[in-house]
Length: 172
Picture (tube, rainbow, N blue to C red):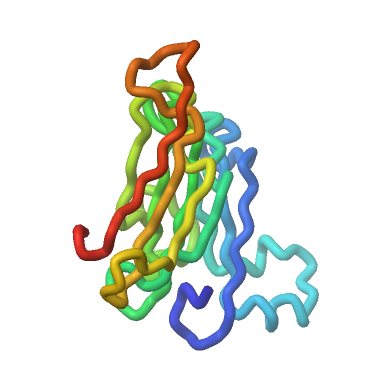
């Protein structure tokens, strides 16, 4: 996507074991105009990154899934969905919506987030799949969907059903 609204394609990669702040909490890097960066062949691609965002939960695996979300908040910058399946208290997992306007420099996920949600139970693997930039309600504004692979309302070790959740832009 074009997360910095400069008209050029940006690139984002993640490393779920990045230990910048939290022990193996995970992280992601964004490059503005990724084609120009790659054509220059920098000595260290990480040094050429425009932004570095890291999770705050030890072993949370921030960056497990990434997806462009479209311009959810209407500020002219594309936003980014990021899964952290073992983030949060008791590893309930989190999914974050990061503002493209805030993807700049080194920052913690909370400082770049427009929105975040947590799972309800330990190891429900929320964010196992995420989908951004979809318009489910036809209003012309991006909606998002995510799954929790092992969701269950009884917090049972024997009943492990999944769940799909959709957030409509008209409900933000």
